[in-house]
Amino acid sequence: MGLFGRKDDDKGTTDSAVSPDLAALTGDYELDPAHTTIGFVARHAMVTNVKGHFKDFSGQLHLDGADPSRSTASIDVVMDSIDTGNADRDGHLKSSDFFRTDEFPTMTFRSTKAEALGGDDYRITGDLTVLGTTRPLVIDLEFNGAAKDPFGNERVGFDGKAEILRSEWGLTWNAALETGGVLVSDKIKLVFDISAIRKG
Image (spheres, rainbow, N blue to C red):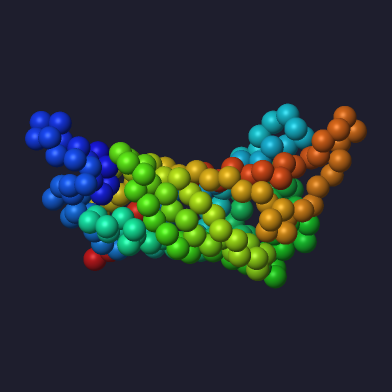
């Protein structure tokens, strides 16, 4: 089932037709931090992956069930909340070698464009600001559905992914390996598992 349009095989409707239940999802939503993950994956020493996430963040979504191009997203991430499962590594990531969290405590994303790609697939383009540098970021999303939880909250869910080159945001620290290559990959995979609650 698509978020903004779907094909009903029994009735022969097309993806351009918006069903009433999908149109009803139009509204403003807030990310639920207890059920949302904003994470990343970096290649370490050319042989393995290190995964991490941020524990402190907030985000707002506006979904338009009739016109996906009018949907928006904004996310603010507290950089001191980075967690890779290793305190020493987390401390290094917060230091002047990487995120300089004392000087740049927040990472932000502000959407500039939303697209429906067909089926359950969508794309959000926006501005990602890290270390005071703002560059475009494209996030591919899959709509996981909508439901009302036992507490009466109306929820929507998405999975998302993106790839960036950290050097484009000034994150250039590295160390050479004796066997060739570098300690930390320039390419970083971003992963999102989003649960958002409708406001009001």
